[in-house]
Length: 466
Image 1 (tube, rainbow, N blue to C red):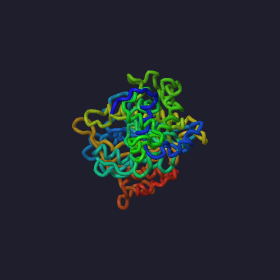
Image 2: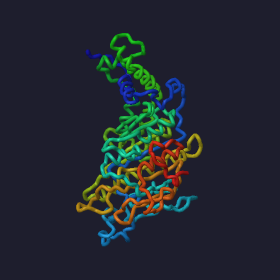
Image 3: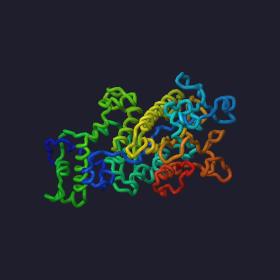
Image 4: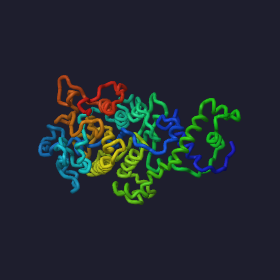
């Protein structure tokens, strides 16, 4: 096929976006004409954020700490637990768990945090529930990650079911132009139309590239025909495309992308021009990378807030921080990486809590946040001064539809094993109790918004529902 050297602003972007969103009606299931007639973006009445800490976090340092005066090195053979807070050896980290200061007008915190927790985030304890003792039933990174994303135990390493964000968008059919964004996180769709698909990007510049016009020259006659296709086949070749629905889908995608581009949504994410965002998230106009991508935890948190507050998305799934798979001599490295993620998350909650929502209250009144990792680290320290993979996990739930200032479930005082609990109360029940599993967490998130959670095949943790 011969090369076509005609230039056409935005065509490459249209093709790229069409391929990314290809499905039925693309933007939240809203027909294009209705979307085109929408004069202003409107934030979703209910928003969701899924925050992934990549690598398997040390829960002793954050959500499930232990008192080092009780779990001493002398007792480690008995308890199989060594907090090791003194091994961090950095003045930024205290050597004991802490309870955050009481917020004005709120009850005292019922949650104790480990020394790597950000004080900024801990100060929002009155919006939190910590779930401890979640049994991941796996020590493999991919399986644990996919288990928490879908709430279904993978088959081997293969994910089953849809991502929770896909379930939400598929059930709620929001009107936001990009209902779901998955930032460096896997996303799955089983059974929903293409309108429920997430826009998958690996960094902020990918999102800007998708939402920005392009002047790149088309280098394929086939691409030109797909872009210019109008639903009336002219040649036999075009008739083949039309018969399979490809041309029609591209035509729909092109029109919808024209509307997105005309709205200049990319400008919402060019933070170097937004002094308010730079100030809230401690970002410099040049960004923290050579290409100005703001590809750091604070920049990613700013992306989440922008997508929700500007009415661009209903759900954002984001890999907020990594570097946690630390098996070797790494107490300070792990603690520092955890702290950077929690600090950025604290900035996000600060922002959402301080921002009025058009439906009343603030954005945290309308936002549910799930914070998770694929598993935890062993409570004892290995021979190389690091921690290995551990099944008993913790997670953090925040915001709308949930009870707050609460701890549910626990791990045992020997090797931090996942405890059997009464799922109605979260209290110990060694004879008739049940392990807390990721599907219980996902069912709870769905139920918190009144959505159908039957896909999880378990009941939600009703004690956590507001």
